[in-house]
Image 1: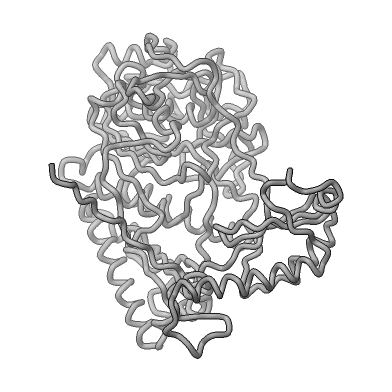
Image 2 (image 1 turned 120 degrees about the vertical axis):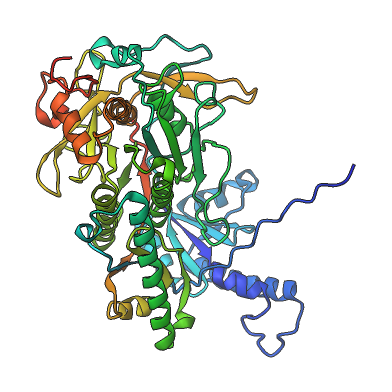
Length: 116
Length: 442
């Protein structure tokens, strides 16, 4: 019997203590503009928009020499919200980047499972 | 007794362990890492021990029985206990001022100060015994469920998303069903979404799924489920990014060719605890939820069915009170609002909540399998149980008429609800029920 080799779980890099997660709301096509598209088309359009905005923000961060102050950018979703772990300084400056609507701290919270 | 925990900063520990940092030894970066780490730990331990001792705190060890009486008396007044493996100290004192002084004196570059708060966890919900045999369909005639099932309206062609603790996909009530499941991990960079057989970290989600679509006990046994597990079992914590990723997966599923025109309902038997959040964090949470809900409703025509919460009249949980959702309160089988069921004026638009009610007292449904792989059942109470009842009713209505989606489905449920003898802030439009022809009187 051969020994089964199990894949080791990756070791997560530790977030530097001076960086926190921020929610970066980016511009997107309005619901009116999306009328007439079906669900799949909307999903593709909105996701493509988020990816484009993320690329723009990455480029903006690089152009402003802030790479070292950004730890992680979450994979974009169909929602127009990007989750970026960075220093508060970067978050403050991001407010001025093109396509950024708002920046706010991403809260971690508990949920009540609505049990009595 | 007042207390706090001083926790050695992880970033320091990591850099010390990797050999790139030491307290006073930067000239010898090539030294053995473990020696460096232990030297680093010794240095910060010495510092904190000295600081606390100077302030009059006594060091205690885990085995308190080994202390003599005098030491024990002192220790009970102001003490600190090292937790070596964690690199942490628990600091206690009956004197609040002394605790504050200690917090101020500890070097914050070495230690995080964590308040030792008491957590108030939701009370146990499990009413009665765990049983292995299922009962007959428990739903009363006025719900219209029996009538629907007799006419083969069982939720076919409808997709129900469930955001919860997971789902035991091998429970006898659920194993024949198509259940798409994803676990959304906290660290997205490792496994973005884990595609695994459905499991439940708590049992709550399995009960909810059984009410929606259990084979014999569910309101809409023909509905397809898409279950996302986004909640930590131990802490019941989650984050907005996790919820966004989970819902994004649901939206990707409903955008597939075969699902493109199917009605979609999302069940959320949960509410966010915002009391401990600062105002700015609360504002952020509201912005985040708003963005989510408007996309779900306006762009994808999804109906979010959300529990209003179990803190009783005058209290509500987000996102239940957002106008984009169908908020759900609980009644018993005599149509009396449950004492725990929340309600009141929404802080968002001032409208009365809940929008509608469902059966939520002593609801019989599936419980995750035991260690011997046996499926079991239990009665639970809560707006968590009323919500999947309403989601199931919504699935029946949409199954009977696929044009009923999103806002149209919401309005249909409100228009056909059975009015109850209770004020609007307790029962909303009334009890959700299935009416095949859409009339008020089935």
